[in-house]
Image 1 (spheres, helix red, strand yellow):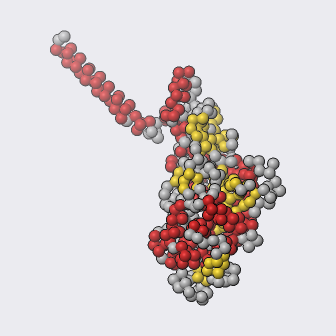
Image 2 (image 1 turned 90 degrees about the vertical axis):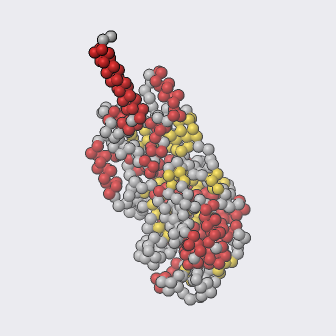
Image 3 (image 1 turned 120 degrees about the vertical axis):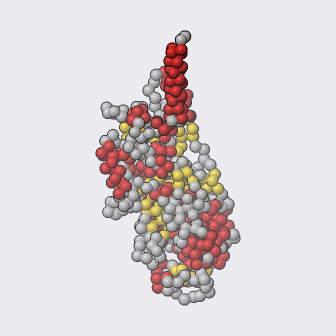
Length: 525
């Protein structure tokens, strides 16, 4: 080989090596960058070239893919989209799946798209047989009847959806039976293949002051108001106070001056606790722990927290219920609930407010349902979960969720006492939870309902002219067995300081959910 030819050969070899190196850099080191580039249309077309797996509730698809005649070969469809949107989330070729704040479409994307390593053998089989690839499906724990009932019951007297949320749990397993957030949005509009229509829907939803895309059931935290008294009561029972024990229940309670008897100042200008409109709890001096819960006497629980229990015991009890600031996922992320700061618990005035769910106490609606579920389940709190099973494309089971104990907030004997006390809140004619009584002819006499109302001030002070949030958390028992626990919050749905008004707004919603769920599982047939 002469010298010129040798130089050309070397140059060609160098060029081939450079090409080979560049190819490896692009494929190995920069592959993800190019694949994930939003301007890479081939990735988008490939993503929509095969059907995405279904999201299933009670054997029916609530989200599934249908074939189209356009460039994107499949489009997502949502049955009763606004009702199930907090659970399903959305799948949009413009806005994706919503990331960590999204629904099952986001959290189970690998299964639904078929990209999960758990589906490797299925994908390999498709390659070898030439079959059209498909995603796996996800089966949810939701009960369709309970979910639909919850959504419908959130409509007010004017027919419009009230802001708030409903969560229902199976106390014995932690399975989420209903998860509604209102007002909601229609994921079908975001799944459209018309970019202009998608953009218009996105702008409308995000500019709506009602924030319809917020999953209030999991992602929002609220002052629980008197729902928190369930935790106070659990702590009291744990430390030897009985339902029949009489505790201080004055018409006004001064946490910094416990012996002071004078009425609270107008507008609560000084640290002082009173009952709604100066209402008397029993004789105006003391009342049993049971009656204090039944009538939801603020002064009784403030005095109980400040003089008998103390901040540390209440904190310990709250943390046992899951109100500890930790992150929970179901697998959707849940906003952490909190009892507030240590300073709140060490200051008598702040502790008095904390005792009835004000000050810095904040919980999610899911946490509200967890409180009732633990009481009803013999004191055992099960970890909530939304995904029942992951399925292969042929619908055979791939993975399933096993019930898991989260904590033991109270011993069974304490839980039994608290169950009876919460039943009195609903069944005693003096109770604030009377609107949650189940009177359906099919269920009457078979079901026992227990619960606790809450009217949580959300103004700057309790004297602010802002309507409080209305709460109800409770459970339904059949033959002594807990079947369902429910929490309902209606934003600005109560009357300041009036527990009966809070129960009147939120209690009927809980009643409808419990009624429809119990009928759906055959109770009374």
